[in-house]
Length: 66
Image (cartoon, rainbow, N blue to C red; front, side, top):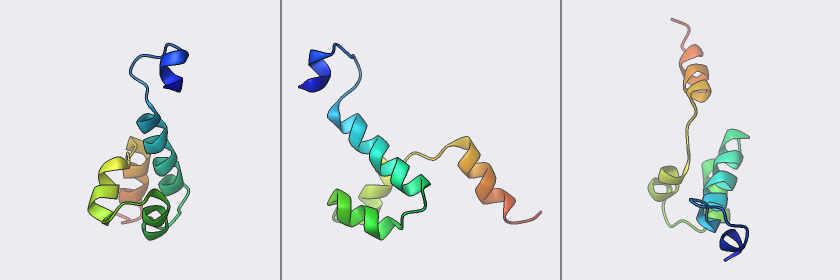
């Protein structure tokens, strides 16, 4: 595996996949499009891949206006 060749512990091609999907989501790509690209059968499975940053949570709550 490429990650083994560069001696990076705790990194895998799966890590890159998760990062790519999270970057698409953060860029505002609709989840349905990301689902098609990633090949996930359902949105629930896809959403387990996506990380949510503290900044994203703050932004989401800020639109409420309380």
